[in-house]
Length: 351
Image 1 (tube, rainbow, N blue to C red):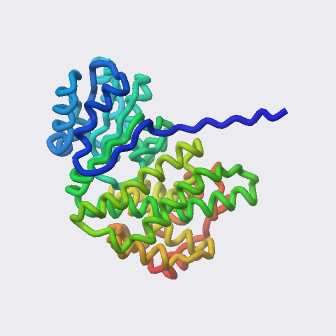
Image 2: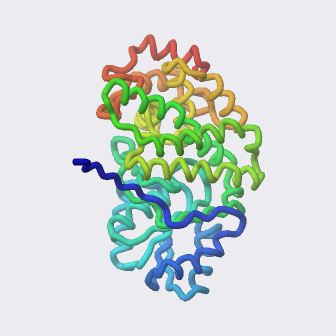
Image 3: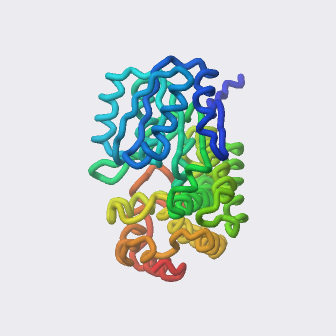
């Protein structure tokens, strides 16, 4: 008897474009949310978008509490949970960059209330993903969260962030190219199941950004408009798969290893982009195509541009396979020998 079942999560609404934060109040009323909203934001993003979002919600009859927080760390998450428990919000909004959205995701899981993602930058594809990256003493952990109830991406706000953040988000999505190859490899060698629908979404996202790299320019809202859709869809692909597989492979393992060795030097998406160059070489694919797209967009392609040393890149390559040993990738079970890692990084121009 056929007994297979599959659960997929999607945002109920995704709204992107100029001035769309004004839709949040009417949206929350349509959803039938309770009267108390908690906005999780940062010191800078509070002025930029947190307070404007609060005004929109108040105009729609909601009571709003703004909570300013810092990086997505275990300590800040605990503090936010305590604040949320006192406020007892009906729904939570993450208004800010990736760290504020990740903290808001986890707070919503803790309270079991809906969560709306309102990005002020697009530095990675976590805008709409069901995972949250929380820093701890050993680097960072990818935690199971939930797909946002809605995503509201105001291009007029996101364009005000430094171009570096948008380039990082593009690099994170471009790295789907190697994550998908790793998934295929695990399917062939370990009989790991592949979700063709999530694979297609992730592949569309990375291909779109690579093919439109020359149209992604600093301080141009139309550039934000072009890439915000594939960035969001990349996150949704993970919700469809029920895992991060379509957007996280060996290149992400390299990035997490680098976080442990040289924390805070580069953005997550930047590191994944550089990792994708090297992992595509290992797969025997067109690594120059990835490097060329990253350069055009303005994302790093070398160790020096990441702000790390050659030695740190080599060390991250040799230990990357230990980051998620249960996830089979091109790195295999035993990883890369030091000499091979150095040759890989030199051949691809990373060092």
